[in-house]
Structure formats: C-alpha cells, structure tokens
Image 1 (cartoon, rainbow, N blue to C red):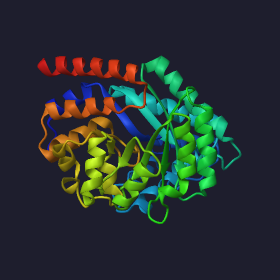
Image 2: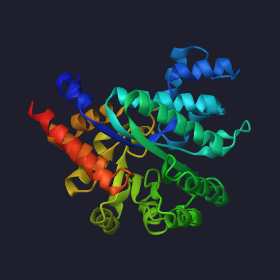
Image 3: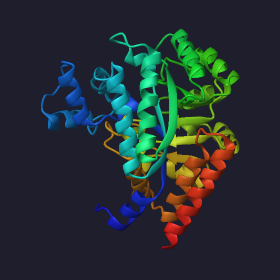
Image 4: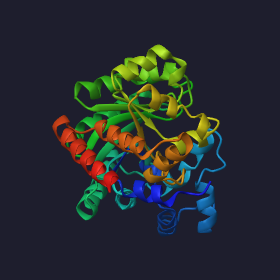
Length: 347
C-alpha cells in the first residue's frame, strides 16, 4: 500500500514521545562499522549493506531470534566513549523526527565484558543524553533494566545503581529479557528497593508469555507501566484493573510482529485496546532491529487500524501523560503538546 505523504509528513511534524526505546537496539549501522574497525571487533558481515540486512529483523519470527542480533551491537558498546557516542546519536535521531521526550532503557550489566564498570557506562549515557539536550533540545532520562535470565542478585545490584543515580539521569527501573521460565516475582526484592526510593517502574510483560506475566509485573513488582502487554486480553479482570488504574501499555507494533508476539499487525490487539479505552503509547522498541521510528509506528497504526489524525493526536498525548517525570512538569508538558497539536491539526 502506498504511503500517504500528507499524513506521513503531518505525523513527522507532530511533537512526539518515545517511552520504550532500547539503547543497544538503536545504534546507527555506520557507527557499528566504525567502532568495530577502531576496536578490532569482528562483525558477522563486513559489507555495510549486508550488516544492515542482518540487523534489520525482517526475517525474525521469535524473540530468541530477534535478541540474537543484539550480540553485534553490544560488541561495540564495551567502552565509555562508544556508549556516550551511541546515546548522543540516538537522541539526535529521535530529535530529527521531533521526539521531545525520550526514555532510553538499557542494562548496564551488559556493558561490562571488557572491564567497564556499571557506573562508568551509566555516566557515559548521561553525558551523551545531556550533550544531545544542549544541541537538539530533546529531553528525557534513563530506565535501568534488570535482566530476567540473570540471578535476581544482579537485578538487586542494578536497582542499587538506579537508586544511586536517581535525580542524576535515571528516571525508572525495568525488567527485560525472555519471560518464560523467568518470572518477574523472582526479582521482587529489587523492585521493593526502587519502590521504597520512589523510582518509577515499567516491566516487559505479556510479550512472549501470558497474562500471568503482566499480573506479576503489576501485583508483585508494582509496575506503573507495562512494556508490550499483547497477551492482556486473555484475562479480562486484569485488563479492567490495568484500565481502571491507567497503567499505560507501551506498544511496539513492528517489534511485536518480529518477535512472534502477534501473527500479523492487523491481528495485534492495539485497536481493541484503543477502543476499550486503555492508556496506550506507541514506541520504537529498537530503532535499528525493527528499522523504525516513532513516525513509522504511528503511521503503521494509522494505516493498519483505520485511525484518523485525531486518534494519532490522542495517542501522542496519552504517551506524554505517562512519562516518568514529576507531575507538575508533566502537566505543563502535556498542556503545551496538546495545544501545539491542536493548532497543527487546525492548519
């Protein structure tokens, strides 16, 4: 189906937000190639075009296959200068499509293979994001990810790191990785620590496993938002609870298809969620692996589910309402964005 250029350009021009964006899944291919050459790192493909084809997960059908590509990006993210550069470039790319607020998530423990300390790599991400804010005006913060498949003690250490960097760049805590056989409740102690320290929580849940995963994220770990949540309709009571408490679902359409979370875009529960009145945001997940942007995700929803531009506006506003930022500041941000969108739509 041909792209409606007028709608695309309108969405591109809108102020936007990205609540679910992985640092190690959003690296420029050219940067990977340059850093690999500088640091004598072997890549699966020497040719840039071949590398791009490999990293774009168009042929992926499972979460395991999708996650396999991260070995490449992580291989060039093992020193602070590289991490700072990649964080800066991600913010630059997001700002280029008018993303105003960007929440960058990553797991510091995955960047220690060559001896870099978790404190050093988190400070590198902070430096990169602050430089980007000065240069491009894009704002945001870091969500530290615990890892389901790691010992819960590691998640606790990462929670301690999040607490240490609260108000210094960290705005939230997450749990990522394969869901099956790795229940969120095993990491409950880490989430108790961040909750006691008044840190926001979002958890990957209901992406590759059923609603029990979402239940644990909310009722054991205190999640304020849910990453993906595609299996939520399988439990109507839980869905009502999520809706009643305005727990935002961070929807990532393209990656949900590529990880096998849904059989096709049109079979994604997004439109059902929208019609039911759940609070939703549309996000990139991994700009590189899914070859996407916030503009692409919003346009994909527009095209696939028969939305109108008013629906797009409301989805964007709901995203801003769910940002991990203090209420007073968030309230002003929502008001400013809503007014700006209203004026743009009238033109």
